[in-house]
Length: 141
Image 1 (cartoon, rainbow, N blue to C red):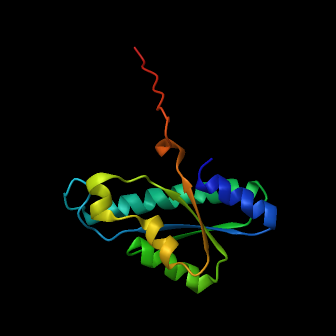
Image 2 (cartoon, rainbow, N blue to C red):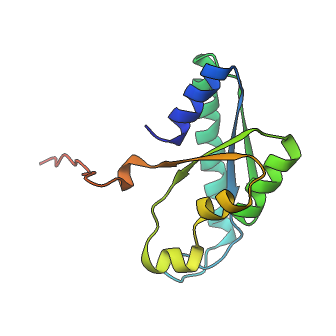
């Protein structure tokens, strides 16, 4: 299960609502040290909004109240500010499993949130980064 699935199950179990938060980082250097473009950021924001909207509809159809929030800024700061502003009891986050130079350049958002959050944090390792995960691809000829 991924973080969203755990969040839905927890919300069902305790009668809570979910806020799906996505933080768009400012235009900056990417993993490959190239500068991101503002136009691309706009397309990314539209795609994320569409995806979160679909998630909210699916979550609500499962009987859980949900809403989406898209914020800009530094991920750790934006997550913590959102939690403070809405007095949340629990943060459920997925880990991306960054390693090497990516982790050095971007750090671990989950680690920083774990250290600084005023509420409980439930960190879920994304299945695709778990040991033994194998991506299955079907080749068409």
